[in-house]
Length: 147
Image (cartoon, rainbow, N blue to C red; front, side, top):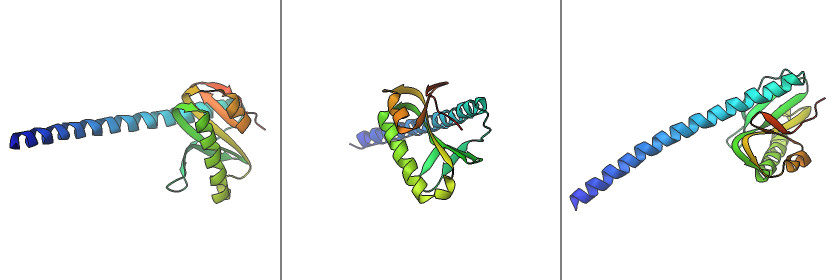
């Protein structure tokens, strides 16, 4: 009986170490996707003649955006995901609307919502209808008109 318990403890310990490694890898991948998103979005902005430095913003425990930048009355705000869908577009729109009400000083002027993903599943027209600039990898699935 003692040997069974010892073997079980050793097995759980190995699983715990593996899980910790997987968590670290996942965190690194997530950070890489967020950085890539900011670089790509900044590039598209530059092509349109806009120099807006992007970073992430944490407004409180519930409201964090992977992509955020503000300059000369234009606010860029959005998320970076590996896979995205129409459901995620709805979620982004709702979160931005709520954040605008709670922190109006962070969303003054023309607010442009952006969703960056490595793979989009669904109809890009949903993003267009909701006013979301949709970027898949390095191409704009929904072009965003700028002032």
